[in-house]
Length: 227
Image: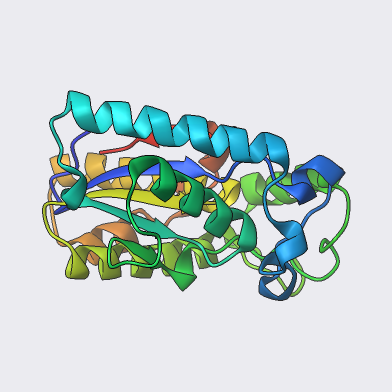
C-alpha cells in the first residue's frame, strides 16, 4: 500500500456491491435514475457489502485504528448509499451520524443519454474512447478528465473536513479506477518535485496518465486500501 505524503487521512475504497442494474446488465449512470430505490443492491450485493464491512473491520483492528477515527464518504446513488449503510451497520457506526457523509462528487460517471439504461456490453465502447482520448466526452456525458476534476474536489473537501482519519470511500467502478490512477500518478510526481494536492492532480491530468484507468478496475463489493 502506497503512503501518499500529500494526504492528511488514510483511505480505503469500496466499489458498491452487486446492484440490481448489475444483475440486469444495465448501465444506470444518470443521477435521476441512479438515486431511484429500485436500483439499489441485489441480495448478492448486500452479502458482498457485509463481507467488505467485515474485512474493513479486520483491517482497522489489525492497524489498531479506533472506530471513532473512521469516516464513510459515499456517492448519493442508491447502490452506493445501500452499500455504505450495510458497512456502517457491520462497524456499528450510526449511518445518520457525523461519521457517514454523502459526497455528491463521488457519484457515478455519466456516460451520456445514448448509453443510459443500455446494455453493459456498451462499456467496451466507452473504454475504447477513453484509451484513445480521455479528454473526449461521450455525447452529453463525462470524459475521464471531467471525472478527475470532480474527484479532486471530493478529496480536497474530505481533506479539509477530516484530519488523521481512516476514510472509506464508497463509489463506483469508473470513478474509483480513475481516482486510483490520479493518486498513484500524483505520488510519483511528488517524488520528483512536490506540491499541494490540487496542483499535483492538475499536473497529472494528462492523456498518457488518464487513458490507463482500466488498470485499476475493481470487482463489485471489492475493498482496497489505497493509502
